[in-house]
Figure 1: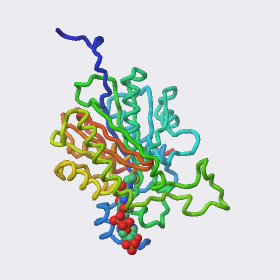
Figure 2 (figure 1 turned 60 degrees about the vertical axis):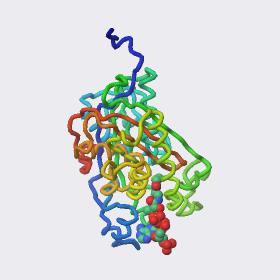
Figure 3 (figure 1 turned 45 degrees about the horizontal axis):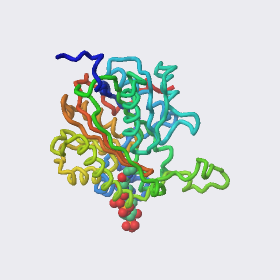
Figure 4 (figure 1 turned 180 degrees about the vertical axis):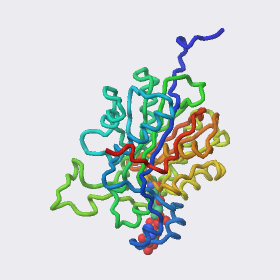
Length: 353
Ligand code: COA
């Protein structure tokens, strides 16, 4: 017996568009080595990063988010969404959230719009929130954006972090559909451990330590990361989360065609892939050209993989992220048949005010 779509109970969020942008200015390792006590060999050996893109002084997170969101909507063939979720650690302002402005600039005034803060895991959390809006029937189309301008919070003279982080934005469009469709988001795993909140911080600027120009120390105003410890936690949590979401779906790493982890450091990505038993060539490595772009890194890597045909329709894709909080999360989906997307590497002036 054929079941009509009205009777089906397996409503799911289905991916139907991707897009991403990187700021125009590309900074390679040699440029950093000219002003910091570092060198290309150290950066490439320890992180795999060759270059990153840095926002222009007039470019804020919302500018990149609007450009990425607009591209994802165009790729989906839709010009409307019922909700906009923006994952970011670098909102335009502490108040209000960035998402309503992004929605308005995309011509979506009136829709639900909110930010999600889970640092580098933000995009997977935002994706889960977007999928939840769809499966609960609150929305039929959701634009999920990850956008960060880390260059505004990283001290440019901090050689550890200045070499690792870059700016950018990526976005996915989700629509209501069914669990057996290509593009369906089939399972999530999300977690946190606030006991380690001090491993990745911007100490000042919140209610705990408001910024006072005369009293706030330079270091307290900037992004700080206990790199080695974070590295160890990232390996464990990403591997565990990936295994959890696979187990929840009755799958094994062998079933994964493409692994798209948060692009923190090539060594982390390779080690997690190896621990999962995944061949290195199944793992996205956009980090080499964009550095760690925070909440933007997974949608940017997906857009880049789609553009370069490393993702094919029907591929089973595993997303896994880790970040400050500490937070971590994974998502499983099958890749849909999408039209070609624009290359993220050239952020056109289209989006700037
Ligand atoms: N150039 C040259 N030397 C550098 C350097 C740089 N850019 N940055 C740090 N160093 C030095 C350190 O001062 C240290 O010197 P010392 O041995 O004399 O003390 C040495 O290199 C080793 O530092 P270490 O911190 O052990 O390096 P690392 O191999 O751990 O690499 C990170 C540093 C940040 C790249 C790495 O720890 C990392 O990627 N961490 C995890 C990031 C992550 O997962 N983030 C996810 C959430 S955002």
